[in-house]
Image (cartoon, rainbow, N blue to C red):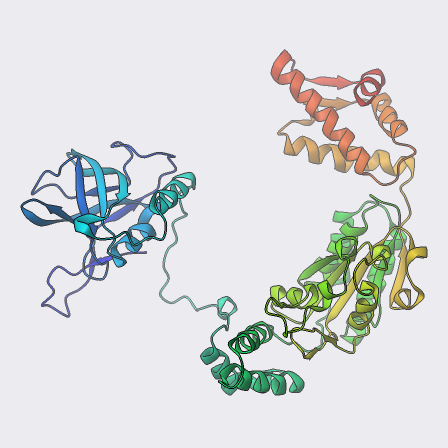
Length: 494
């Protein structure tokens, strides 16, 4: 951020002028050749170690040296772009520092900044070494990208977050009609609690936090724009090989959305062996729908309260995972990807997490214990995955359209290994196809090795193993290419 120099304080209308330029640097340490900043030394040569402070940036981009003979000022000529905000902070807080530098033809090159308690004063940072901690972090960072300021650029309202009571009140006054009726009524009641002095500070804090969460969610209607089926098919083909029946079922769902302009009444339940791409299908559907998505990993949820949140009567109360997902997405229309739904009934806490999911999936609304307001769920599209649908309760199963994901055949695994798994690994390792050659005999050996395993994760690991071995031979043994045959593959993969 530019800091301006007002050369003559008496001239109120004098044009502001930035006294320094920034330069890009990614050096991990500073030296006179690669300084943090350069000060003007044309009028006076500065000492190797000099004390003082950076002037308030509103007044001037300079450093005031405090010496035995008084105070002298020097303009800042250059700054490492990584340190602009730090120097501004030092100036705004009038923090006394000691500079270490060297006088050169282009100025006094500062390569070290230390915080000091000058003239009997106290340090302003909270901890000893705090300034050095920040400097070390900045040195560890890369040079920031240069951004051109566009004065005509429109502000992005999506970056705005309502947190203060004043901003929430103003929003309710000006745009309260954009909220569903029940949420608008709820917001008025919570505003009264947040402003009241007849309740405890804890209650006011919880009310303000709940308001901030709800006001920052865009509560959209359940109307959906049409989706191009050809583009949907392209995305599915890009993500998955084969699985024509599964792709057909998803395209049917897209056609249904295009006709009704609403989401289907039932979500998708993808059932199949591990490693067959169920989660990948779920992400592809979210991409097709052009909706934000969140994941609920039911194997790690042991208590329904993790989903529903805790009551505000507790000091450490907080909203549940479902409400936090709405908050992170910033809108009410999103895809919930529920991983391992068959583990949902294995709760170890007070209750069954699967029962909470029923209210989310009914499209009648969901109530979080912390928020204490029913939020609409008509824009929520659930996609669940499971390995064993026999472990899922009948009420939960009835909320989904079930799609069985078959395991891949040996021929399909061959094609996936050749076209997807191996090329992806080679690209990641910066290897060319002609440097790691898999013969037909070697391919048969790979497929035979994992004939009894489900999914393709083992194939991807095998591709990683073979590519790593090829890279080792090229880098260490100096060979130009590695051609794997069946015997070599069996020996490598055990």
